[in-house]
Image (cartoon, rainbow, N blue to C red; front, side):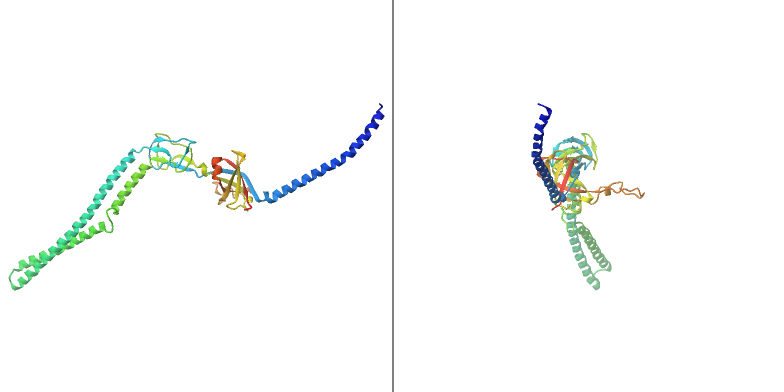
Length: 354
């Protein structure tokens, strides 16, 4: 077959294919245009209905109110019951300080307290003795004044000498002076016991406080966990002598973890406490989504509380977008299912429609 014949045979076929391909191309182009329009509409709707009402940041980190365990008394460490990464419950024993000196202090304070009770009891006995002395002196006054009156009548008739009358007068005056002294002693004893009982007496209260202090110090030889959490930064060792206020370890309550998300200042206009937040962590990835609520916003930016402020007076100043920490409370059930650790990175998205 010649080349001319071949050309003649295939040219009509090509024209036919071209003629039938134009409608298909048009349909494809129309479908593509429709897909673009639908995608653009969906994006516009998402941006208007969802994205326009959310703010997000990956400058967020897990935090917790860490319990700092410090020594409250001085003494050598006898036992250390925990180690780093160990989970403890509230009330578990963390460490023990040698209690011998504090046990002796309790015995001494208890003896002082008992001695004080006896001493205060004597005040009441002495007060009763002073009251009895007043009654006795009152009888002496009555007797001596009676004698003086009788002798004075006899002296007027000359039955007794003036010397006997003077002696009776001196005895009466002495009895009155003794009565006054007895009454002053009674007043002094009244001041020691006025309006109080033995148990309520100031000396008793002071001795009891010393005993309670000794018992408190003894109880502080056993150092317990104040909260549930994980032991971290354990510094104390057996045999080490600790001082009051010395840091021993920390307990991190991971079940009470929260997130501090640092949003840009331009993102905070619509952020309010109570708004819902979705979060993901770098630890678990996007497969695990945490849910929380906004607790509140910090009182200032991070740079405002920095040791070295960002402002200076040299004129070499560059404006930097500031960030404000937003405290986010997490769902306890989700935390129990997927525990977090303090300092982990998070991504937080706040729904500002509420």
